[in-house]
Length: 166
Image (cartoon, rainbow, N blue to C red; front, side, top):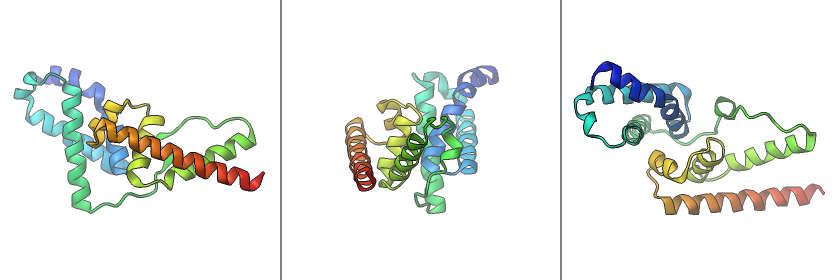
């Protein structure tokens, strides 16, 4: 694969790679580094890339492995998510609706790490189950279970809070 073809294939998906890396690493600089390392690894394998049926899927797989290496190297723990880096959706207009959004975000942040990651990939980044599976290495069935548990937990906790104040 020549440089021009490489740029045409992999540069357009670099933003998606960054989003996946950020969700896994939860750090902007590490995510950028992971994407750069992924692109460098893909460039090094450019002579064999013509054999790959789905370049985007292959790139995400390489990125996932790079992110796992980052986490192992830093012995990372899942930390609080900085919602301002990814979620630039405007808040609702009413004060009560804004308060509810803040409460729900906090409830999501309190979920177990994988439930939190899967829920944010699904609902904030609009990833399909297949894309989530590819990004996290979790099979589709487990993704549905994680989403179901996360949604149920957030709903139950939100209703408790709402009933407490009404």
